[in-house]
Length: 164
Image (cartoon, rainbow, N blue to C red; front, top):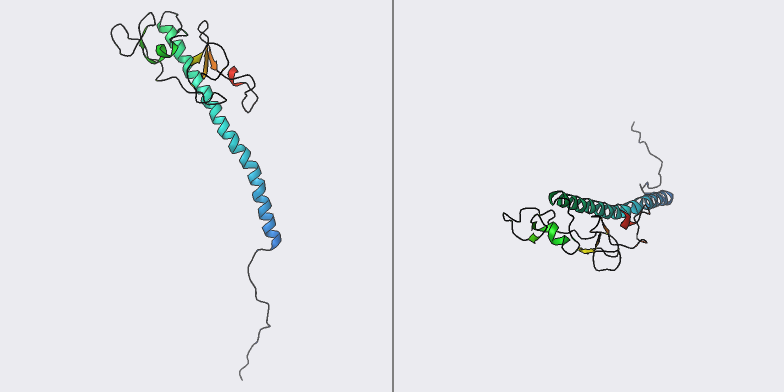
């Protein structure tokens, strides 16, 4: 005797996501995006802020080294760029080539361009803050160098760029 076993017919089973599962996934992706996007944008501005800090540190060190090698004299306002980027003699006169007289320096390869704010991309120096002609403010009396940006321009922490 041969018996055949029959199984009850069932609905065709398909594996698929339900609508509620899809909604939950979309909500989770939205939450992750809401957290990640602001952090990434802060990262870009934070990098520019760090670049500004680094450029100021390099320029300040170059000015300090110039002062140490020139008997306490600071670069003059009119010649600071040449005095920092070329060879100089003891009196601070700049020369493109190194000689027995012009043997000090150079202290910078080039004056860096400002990395933030309305004067972004500008190099060169002005004596007082303001205007869009240069990236840096240099005080020839004290040797201080700062970013040439208005007080209203601040970093993500609210610190004025010109106060770095």
